Length: 231
Length: 280
Image (cartoon, rainbow over all chains, first blue to last red; front, side, top):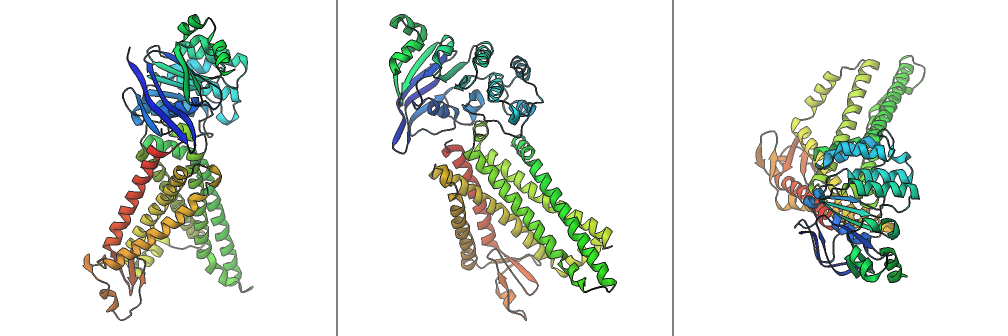
């Protein structure tokens, strides 16, 4: 299997603080990878570098063989950990916006997802609740047939019902040939969808491997392993 | 690029539309006030006849105010891209820095033209209804007394200065974000802008001094400043970019080219910073 993402000796420093420390990681096509770690472990920094929103201090990142830039942004579907849509938009505007800029955007799929999430095109974005905004953001991101999906804390801050809805949407709607990188600290809720996991602490990889293999080897769940490592 | 420009316009049209409506409303008020005052004067009731003379300065002041308001809104909108969450959407689009900046520039200039044109056309029409002015004749008269070379030069000067100013503002905002990532001293951009703007204007003046070769737009011949000085009146105004005096306007060729290079360089520099250096 080929690597869709190659990360070599990646370092990111903010003034004196190192957010990522000489990181090496390859992500294969078709795999769902969980990046797990507590707050401040470097998860979001890593995803922002992959999304082309942050520049590394040292090292190399290749996505589909290319450095982050215009091309990689066309094949990466990125869900940030915040509401990123323009506040003047209605849901319909956001759908049209994605359709205009991403050739891989599937409008029918977006409509199905909107229905599933109980959202309507005429709704104004600034009048949506936090949970509804997260659902809309995920709808837009998953309605793309992207090579790589990057989801930063997709279920943080929503109630358990919405959490299940979002998880179902992720499982049922992402392209099976694509890769998905997900960060979370709600490990128990998400561990079943991971093929591989990476435990990250203060910018260093503490442990990485196949999720099923780690469960067998350590005789514990990914969540229990998380608590053992960071507890 | 045009797609992004469309959304840029869509995102700003409410504010700009309201601004234009406000300015048109205020124009109506000013013209009605002037009409009322002129009627009083004609009836010999008081000495308010001088008030209509304030019409033009008031209108000019209002248009200036509208441009400044629009400029602050455009600057605020650009800063939001770099400092607020909406940047996560803008900068994750598969667009180059040139495309993002170009779209923002064209949309901003388009609004400037829309504000200017709507105010001028509306006031011309309203003036012709209220005062019976023949604006076509008025425009012809103005063009007769002002040499076309001066009008063309002033037009060029306004367009180029506006583009350079806006680009320097964008560059200063981007540079302040790149160099100092602390949001609390985001106002640093204004200091950077003042320094850059002064430096650029100084350079333009310096270039015109070092290379005193001018294009006379009346004759399309290259000339020196002596063509102004040898005339009966020796006074002239030197703006670096152009020199005017004694009914003649000369464009400094090197300053003009240098100004265009400054605009291109600032555009490319800002695009580069946006594409390669911005950290969100």
